[in-house]
Image (cartoon, rainbow over the protein chains, first blue to last red):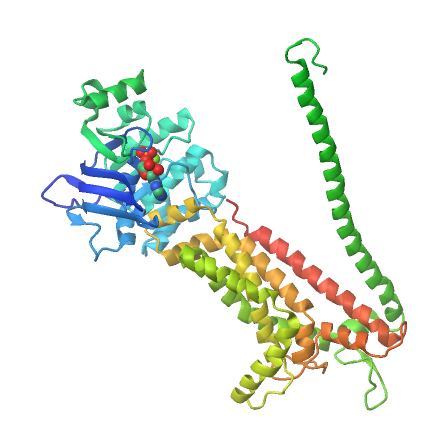
Length: 264
Length: 316
Ligand SMILES: Nc1ncnc2c1ncn2[C@@H]1O[C@H](COP(=O)(O)OP(=O)(O)O)[C@@H](O)[C@H]1O
Ligand SMILES: [Mg+2]
């Protein structure tokens, strides 16, 4: 891995959300979000289904822009810069903040072409072969696929496909990787491999993961944020703190109820 | 299978079993009907091919297939100045291909462009209006296209290219292209819309622009459907009759010059069918020889098409 030059900002936070709300048409899906994502740590977003975890995650790389009728209000900064500023190109945001989806979604192309895709569209100048190899190694997939780089990605197992999607995201050299339930479609062994990979990646990347799996949040994350919603179905952040504390000693009773309910 | 043991549930169960048997009969009847429908179309195809073959035998007993397929002069009805007739079909093939190539050159980029616009760019409101509007073009009778070419497009072309003959391949080809655009745009759009959203999202999340998503993800993933639309449209162009009969002329000519008057295979068939060549005569039988060749050409197109489709398939 090439080590990125340390960006010197006043704060240690890569992403910061201030008073963020998201609307789908007239429906407010999340509200009042204040959230800081510390650099080179894994932040887990947990909470009941429909509490807006995916919605909030998609705000960080402007993927919500692609949903017709959606709007984001409030302020989200990346290294201190407002990513919703009019002068900002959303494609630039997305190449700096990568995303991995719930269901592995490799392109129906070769393994090589999948990883090379992001390099090509982002005007990569170096050796394509080298870039692909580096990304596959970083995603712990190189040994599995080095002899069949030109086979279809569809031939890989689900877990391998998901690691390919991670490699594909890494190739673009983002600073942040957003993961929306990246292991929920995988078997337990593949899940553990993904979690292990996340721990490795957190040395160089900032990771935000949405998960409905408490154990996973507890195993993998440094910090955990709990979201829920009331009758108006607008999701909001209840509390955020070091994962250890959240699971052993939650401050808020709703957090405690949710965690114990889900663990018990 | 009789539910005798449980007295309480017995009648109900029996009733439902009875229903199942009735359902089975429906299934069988439906199966039979669908099979019959399939057999009818297979039988029709076989019948057509047999007719073409049998009728061509008369022709090929007098003209060698070699002469037919390689000859560059076609005058089976009228004798030339030396009093000879010529049975080389290549001028008709050249005319047919010339018109088809002009049509494809116009229709493929236009159709694919429209498909990309409709599937990747147009907002829902626009698509809902535009798509049926374009498909209406496909429903216009071909005779209308013929006169449109002859009385509208040809005069415009002649004001640009004064050397253009009145009946010409260019005008017929361009209007033919217009005619097959909806086929390409509609089928290609269907193929592109069918590409899963998750693939588009993957590309956007890597920083792709809308154009890159359309060209590098959606287009290749839909390629088999898109190529299939080309094949269908070109087969249609090769087989189309009325438009070329009206606008392209009746001069079998070994040329690839679009400014000239030509004759296509289909237009020739029309000419013979409407003429007074007696049934069973050599003149009359040329019709089936040309028809048979036309059949093989479209068959080959379709075979090449399905091979291409399989080769380029990105299955998702
Ligand atoms: N594309 C969308 N259009 C309209 N409503 C949406 C869309 N995506 C999510 N929602 C709504 O927003 C709310 C939050 O959804 P989501 O962010 O998917 O929650 P979570 O990931 O926590 O399950 C839900 O009520 C959901 O129905
Ligand atoms: Mg979700």
